[in-house]
Amino acid sequence: MALQKKDFIEIEFTGRIKDAGDIFDSNVKEELDKMHVSQGHKNDHVHETKPLIYCLGEGMFLEGVDNFLIGKEIGKHKIELSSEKAFGKRLRELVKMIPIKIFFQHKINPVQGAMLNFDGKMGKVLSVSGGRVLVDFNHPLAGKDVIYEVNVKRIIQDINEKIKAFNSFIFKQELKFSISQDNKKVIYEIPESDKQLKIFVKIFKEKFKEIFDMELEIKGDKSEVKKEKNKKEEK
Image (tube, rainbow, N blue to C red):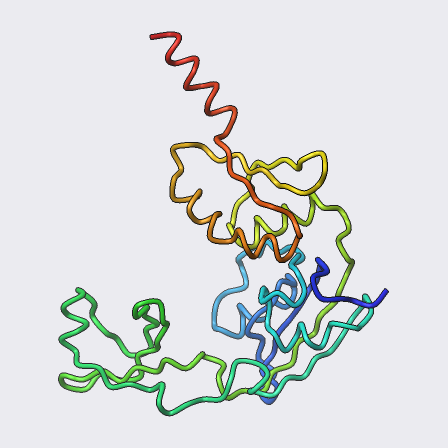
């Protein structure tokens, strides 16, 4: 069965820099161990790994990999990507000179090699000289050709497993949910007290509709409501 856009697929993957062969990302234990050793760390850490489940062609993985996989079959694939199709070309204009006083105003001590967050943009400190700091806002892998070894293990068919995978990928946690009898709505049960999570889930309402063709509804967690009711009765 050929893979199609919006399929939920389970994959194991390893990303390498083409020329050097260095591993920069993987969810395969053996490869993670190699990466750990190559970075100068002792190989005494137990890496917990699991296959990645995500929606193909919906911006949840590298676009160049997704474009390659659409139309392919389940199984192992070796994908070579130029820098333009991977993490982009390295651009000079993304290397900025910033006055050191700006760092001090935010109580940050800029150190060469440090990765810092500048209003949502990650930058690497290249050098600190006098009152100026040179910061590179290019992606760390910009300008590098890469190779991905991807093993597509299966296509997910069960709607509950798809939604659980979506929750885990987007919200980084398991959320209680139920599906309406007509399969047109998914109801999330979120505690009334967790207002931030409610707002965050609502942000993805349109994306949810686009992927699943189902409406997303948020209700208070029934168990939480019951607890509150019991507390009131006790009082």
